[in-house]
Amino acid sequence: MTTTNVPRPRPRHRVGRVPASERLLAGALAIGAAVLVVWTVGMAFSIPPAEPRPVNWALLWCGFDAIEVVAMAIAAVLVRRRDALAPMALSALATLMVADAWFDIMTARSGYLPAALSMAAFLELPLAAALTAFAVRITRRGATQAS
Image 1 (cartoon, rainbow, N blue to C red):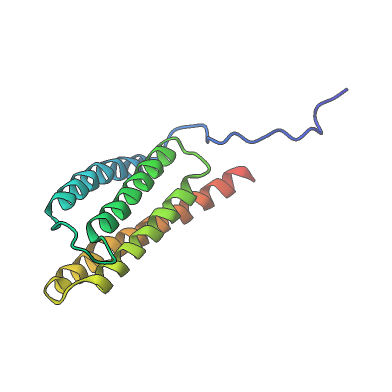
Image 2: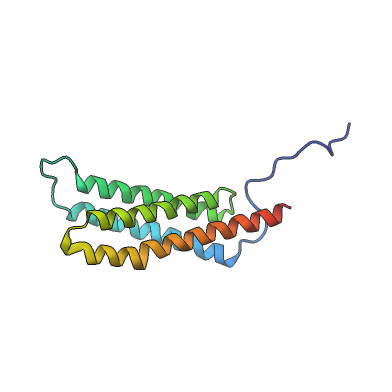
């Protein structure tokens, strides 16, 4: 009995050396996750206590930022390990960044609108575009190596 016709599962991790761009991306994501943890904790203590109203803004924003921290940390680990799921994690994180920019702008009081627009234009949306570009690049590289 020969095993040449039996399909073998592909490893989830690509073997070989991790490209410098992926190492830098993984490091930047890990640092970003750590910075975002500090940002979220600081925001949790700086937002005034919730008054009796339908939306608890402190819980809303801190919870959303906590989701971003988890997504960023997972993406960093998956990119560093060259896992096949890394492009999906990067895409999910990019989507969260766009949603964060949208909700920051839409919920900003008039005095905070310039800051929300600046954060969206110079941080969140460019980061989302870069994450999407990396996801596409990693996906294409994986497709050419598999064939």
